[in-house]
Image (cartoon, rainbow, N blue to C red; front, side, top):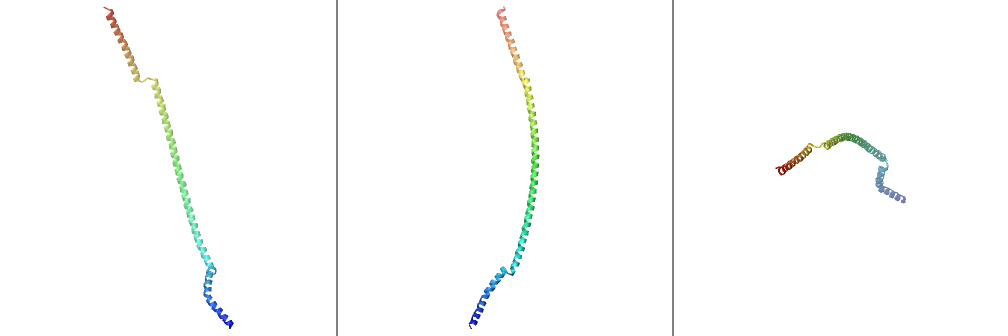
Amino acid sequence: MAEETSLSEQVQTQVAEKPKNNIFNGALRMVKGESTAKLIENFTSEMTLVAEGLCEDQSKLRREVDHAATEQDRRIQRLESKIDVVDSSLDEEKTAHDQALTELRNRLAAIEKKVNKEPSKGKKGERNRIRDLTWLIGVAGAVVIVILLIKHFLP
């Protein structure tokens, strides 16, 4: 009977532990057992999908960056050509300005030369008037002296 008692105790212990074992075994099977391969397959397919999406996004961004770089290069070329046009027109304007300035300086030098060689008509007229007045005063003075001499020395 002793064996019967211990056998019944063992059965009772196993029956009491069976729900605990079922829960533990079920959890262990989920982590480790049959569904592990399925979980790995699901994880792999989802990661593949994510990687493909990231690859497409990266390709799209690379195309956008390449397009933006190309556009930027075009703009730079347009700006450089405009700068070249402005530089050349500025050089032309500077050359024209220098020529006009040289021409004006030459004209001014010619005018100054002419002014220094020939006295102006206004100055010439003044000199003539002063000379004429000097002669007039001299002649008038001579006439006065002759009249005074005639009155005092002639009867």
